[in-house]
Length: 360
Image (cartoon, rainbow, N blue to C red; front, side, top):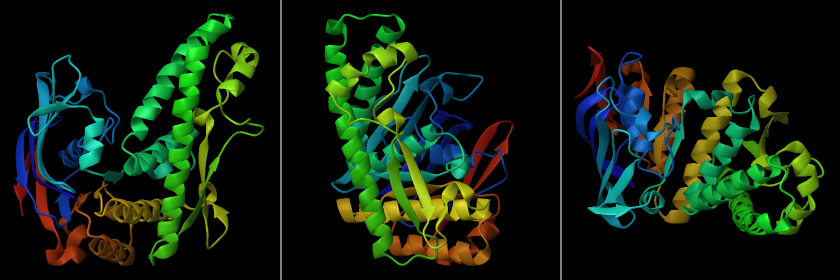
């Protein structure tokens, strides 16, 4: 799987950008604020969801014009070549067309698998559980493109149930259908998350890596009952007092332990936490490659700057062995010296608020 061309129009700081690439890793460098991350954000939107910044459609257009935006891409997927067109007119939601036909976002997941690691994830293990649940669901989405639909269905039903709870509605007839929807969607989410963790752990154990390995576990709050429609019905009184649903996959957490040291990731040094994340992304990529028959696209934002020379070289070697098209950003060309001819390079500059991309 790889992108072979990318075209941006009025997307973030890119007024018009067109680049052609092959399946090798892509090194993108330039000063801070030049528009490097905007490039890989566009790639992240070739997969289901809101991309690596979780931005709404109206936040992605070039300002101050706010005329709408477009991402065009030619890709090589498991089933051959495809043309993707994603755009949003001013004030309108995002639309997706694949080979000229309107499609849902879920259809993107059947064509490409995309994983990313960005600086905002560096605090994954020490901040709230919400970010870890998103990380877990992105992991599950790679193995099952329908996981996102299950999560959306669950969230929608839970919002409606929470509204009833806050309004003090006690009639069971109002709750039944919502709780059945939550139970069905939630069961799929729980199963998908568990399978994803199992596959990633297996991939870690089956491969040699220069990065530290972590033991992963999905953790529910203490005394959480078996999640089903009956448990939801039985808990309505307690949930009404709280004004929200207190059981379900939205309460789960992901824990990680540095295996060699037996130390929780949250207690590791900043450098160790970064290395553990890189290791997880690589293991996830290896697991996906085994599952779908091709490695995913990797988006690694400013990852090289936080590694010493030996770890940088080891990362590049593992990416080459994996065979992924990895899009990597950094402030200086020297960060990618160890890649040699294994990568293609682009320099990004910014003038008067407009990003420009040059092949190096």
